[in-house]
Image (cartoon, rainbow, N blue to C red):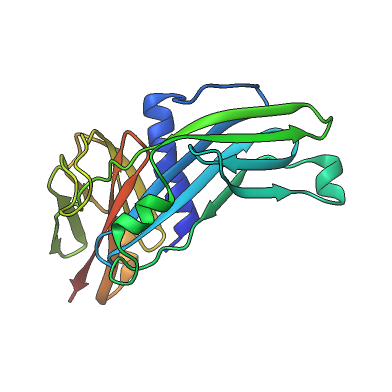
Length: 229
């Protein structure tokens, strides 16, 4: 599965639907996001970051307690010409190995400060808010009739068992099957794969993912499969 594309597309849903939710310090950093991805099927969880700006050469992230947790600085041509987007995934340990409360304690809720400087040595920054509001896993089902393949899910309106109780406001769902992916509004509960794509899959078992995306940007994955006889 195209994991970076999936995450950026999922993130774009919240950005497009909600608009910017962080306080802008300078126009040079247009987007700053830190969010949780929980894979309910694999029972693992990670903290991911996406930012977008123009011609910056260094950037740091400081947590709500004032502790720096990330720093990157370009050198050579990157220091001279600058950089724009940056996306990275934190490691996603299994909750069987690293307890949930330990992970959440390392990344407390609140304001994370993104600060840096442009290639012209102009300082800039932006705030991003991390929430522990993690949506529950979508409950999925499939129907295969010839080349008509429909993936369905139940609406998500709560947090997973054992997670902090927080209000959940789903802004969209994303479905990924091999090279096909689509992001749908929060009112959607199913998608039928395009016939040409479905016909190209061939016989056998095929994997898919359905993501529920909260207004905070946090997202939860359910993995599933269907069989083409």
